[in-house]
Length: 86
Image (tube, helix red, strand yellow):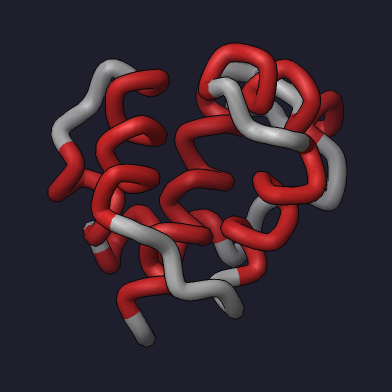
């Protein structure tokens, strides 16, 4: 997995763990919803400052956004956050 894919999947994982929609997360992180969507696909190279902002919003260390185990779990998430049981 690429770094962008790891960050994207982990962003999705932590967003779901907080039961936030992309819109809610975007408001908290000060990002547009479309940008959240692009990040979560892992097809966009993001800056370290973006990683810092994502981590700050989730109250986690930036290195947590590079965790492969969590990224693998994120691959099994439902399409919508309101369907998440975790």
